[in-house]
Structures are given as C-alpha cells and as structure tokens.
Image 1 (cartoon, rainbow, N blue to C red):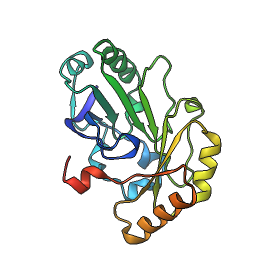
Image 2 (image 1 turned 30 degrees about the vertical axis):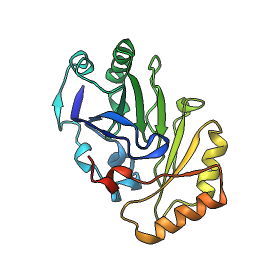
Image 3 (image 1 turned 120 degrees about the horizontal axis):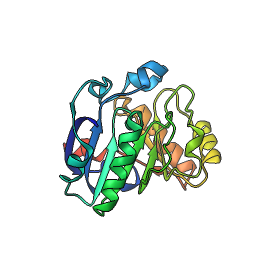
Image 4 (image 1 turned 90 degrees about the horizontal axis):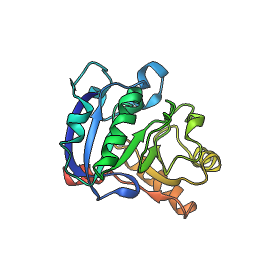
Length: 203
C-alpha cells in the first residue's frame, strides 16, 4: 500500500465531525487526469503523485493503528483497490471501523467492508460510479462557483439513502458560506459541514 501519511486527529468534516480517528492518506489521485475541477481548490495536492509517500505492508499498517475508527482517504484511495479490500478485512479482525472518503469515480471493489462511505462528487459532472448505489452513507457536497442546489437535489434523488452534508469551499470566502447556509436552510434535511480541523488548527 502506497501511503502518504498516517496521523491521529478529529474528523473535521461531515456527520462524524469531532470523532477521534486515525487517518490513512494514500498516494495517487485521478482528479487531474479526469479533468475534475476540484484541482483548483484541493487542499492536498501532494497526494496526487502515485509515487509519493512510502510503501507499507498492509498487515504492518493494520497492526499499528490504535483508534477505534480509521479514515481511508487520499488522493483517491480506491485507486489502490486490492490493498483497500485487504486493509478493510484486517481492520475488521482488529475490531476497528474503517471509513472511506472517495470522489466516487472509481468503482467500489467487491468484498470490501466499510463501516461508513462518504462520497464527495466533483465538478463539472458530479458523476458517481454505479457501484456505489445503495452503498453511500453520506454525500459531501462542496459549494464552490459551480455547485448549486439543483445538483444536490439530483444526487439526493439518485442516492436517497445518503445523508447530505453541504460544505463551503475553504477558499471561497463569504459568498460560498452564505450560499451553503442558504441551501441548508431551504433544504432542512441537509446538514452544514464546516472544516472543524482547520478551525481548531488540527492536522
């Protein structure tokens, strides 16, 4: 498994905000090659290079984690699909719940066991692979210059079981904050997500 970093912190985004987790950030991202517009505001561009970080045996990594919940993130973690399946099975044996954060463009592999799946579809198409149907727990939707409520409503119809978290893009200023708040107020079953870890100065 090609790992960029491993660290303990609080989950800063979405419905699990405030929960202690170990974050495992994998190297490699398909956003630049797929033409996803999130590259304009991505806060971890160092994760794009699939050769960055270091190679770690999955068994070794699984045996070193101490938190009851682990968040597998990136980059795009499902680019390392086989390793992710093995990692999920090993963590299950240790009684550790594995959360996934993905952009949803790479197929969810068969045989993987995630306790929580967060998909953050990216502009311009906000496409999500069909393998995620009925498997998404949360849609994390970033409010930037392209996102509007109609996109959120479409995704909600496609994935009715998913909770909707609306998050203003960090560099968008007051306009994105006001837009996000207005969307949540007009859709009371949606939730506002703030980047708690950044507000607290955490990794």
